[in-house]
Image (cartoon, rainbow, N blue to C red; front, top):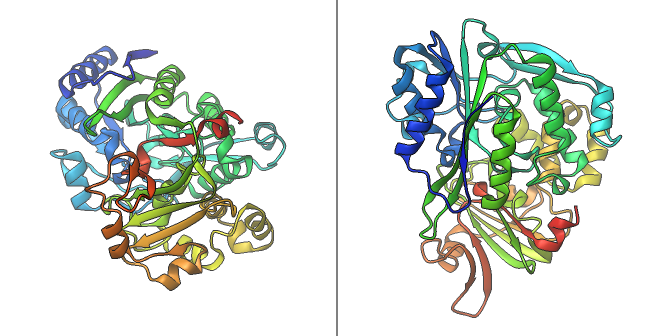
Length: 425
């Protein structure tokens, strides 16, 4: 059932209008005694999910029993991050998802379905696990809050990904990420339909109908002044709200270019991007726009590690971003990588496949560490002097020496692609 749907590429929905639409939708659901809110974590700060969660607290008060940030494999949120993102929502409501423990198995998507969805590339089944809080029958409403935006693993983020991956278990997360990587992220990014989306839709249809999940989805863009605005709000308990949000996100969040980019400069906000696990969005979201032999320069003042988990960090350091053929070979022969297929997927995603060059400018990692995983290194201070984010505008810039660059202030907000490369898939 679609409770609310409003969106347009030139629309800016005010917070007052968002609040009214949300409250009206919740009124239609009737009184609830015990509500679980599942927003994204701080790496999706710009989704406006924090403000929506505050509104949900205003509406339900003590009936909002728990808030479970859908951190997936990310770090648990710090108290400071919770304060910045969720404002006045009481801290004692927040729970921490553990993707390795306290899980409930809902079912398993069969290998035959995965084989078909992957065009014959994968033959394993995928267990569908969720945090035990999500499966707790004491909740009479689960509000899954998040942004629909192009995504490297599933095509378009949001909807049931927030539940099955954001509060999912290690095996399901690993296997779905590897499925997407093997199928090919450039075939999926910016597209609502993908093998991973089909797997999660199968799980929704076969294993999760008993869960009282209602989705609250935003589409976020920037106005002419560079300010974040909510272009769309979609609320419902089925796939229709996702499909409408995804269609709008294609208009709002994908920038198709008439010619490929020779040099891109991407800034990673240090409060959001502390690892390449998250910071490689700068690679994923620009790779289809970069010219052959082009260069991607990543200004990463907050970068302090590779993985958001100690084990994953060690694996990234051990194997590096060495391209799809080599990673597939290693995943088939090395037990540690075979048991962490999500890491293998990440290493595939973060490789340029030798087509373009990636230069990281980290705030806290050394040249030896950066070059040790296969990236080029440049000094952050020098590059910030040359490419000052406060002086650059979004898109093409001509520097004082005549050099032309393409600047992106936050890669998490969209997808950039050379028009011919995008339409070829």
